[in-house]
Image (tube, rainbow, N blue to C red; front, side, top):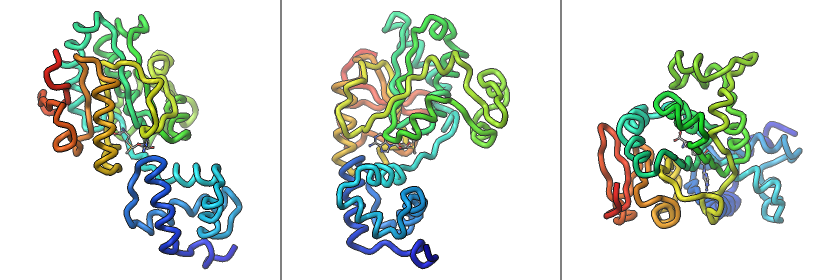
Length: 281
Ligand SMILES: C[S@@+](CC[C@H](N)C(=O)[O-])C[C@H]1O[C@@H](n2cnc3c(N)ncnc32)[C@H](O)[C@@H]1O
C-alpha cells in the first residue's frame, strides 16, 4: 500500500454518501469535516485489509454490514471523564437524590444514556456508595448504562482505566477507595461494577430495555444530533422513561429550550435539572 493511497482524500460523492449513512444510522451530523472523517476511517483500512478509503466506501455501498458498523462506530466521539463538570454530582448527592428516595421508598433506577467508556456511570456509582451506602449494599440502586458503541459498552462493563484516565477528574482518595490496581490498570471495585449494567443501545431505536427511571443522565450527546432527533429523544424520555417525580440531567451546553416546552428547567445550586412540567417533585 503506497502512502499516496493511504492518505487519499475522500471524494465529494463518497463524503455525501457516508455522512448520510451515519446520520441515518446513529443520528450524528458530521457536517463537512472531511479531514476528521478521513483520519477516523484511516485505521480501518488496515483492519479490513483495504487499500483506499474509496474502496472502503464501495464496500459500504455494497451493503457490507461489518465495514459499515466499524466505520459508523469510528465516527462517535467518546470524550468523557470522571466527575465531568463536578457540580451536578454534588447537587445530586446533597439535594436531588434524597428527595427522589423519599418518593421511591428508598430505591433508585438511573439511566445513563450515551455512557461512553463508563466514567460517568462509575462517578454515579461512587456518589451513591459514598452518600447512600445502604442503597448499594441492598441492591436498591441500578445504573443502566447504554451506548451505541460496542467497544464503549465493553469498556463500561470492565470498569478498567489507565492512570491517565483516572487522573482526569478522579480525586486520589476516590481512586484508592473505589478502584483496585491490576498491573498498569485500575479496576472499579466489584461493589461498583455490580451497580452498573452496561448494554448496547442506539438512541434512535426503540428503548425496549429501559424501565421507568427516577433519574436520567443524557449528557454531551444531543449536541451531535439534528433538531428533529433532539426533539424526539427529549419527548421519548419524558413520555416513556421518566417517572413523574423524576429528573433529567443534560450536558452543560445542552438544554430543552425551544426543543420541548413540556420540561421545566430548575436550577439547583449551580446546575440545571429538567423536570416534567406539572409533575410532583
Ligand atoms: C461525548 S460522549 C459523552 C459521554 C458522557 N455522557 C459524558 O458526558 O462524559 C458521546 C457518546 O454518545 C454516544 N452516541 C453517539 N450516538 C449515539 C446514538 N445514536 N445512540 C447511543 N449513543 C450514541 C457515543 O458513542 C459516545 O460514547
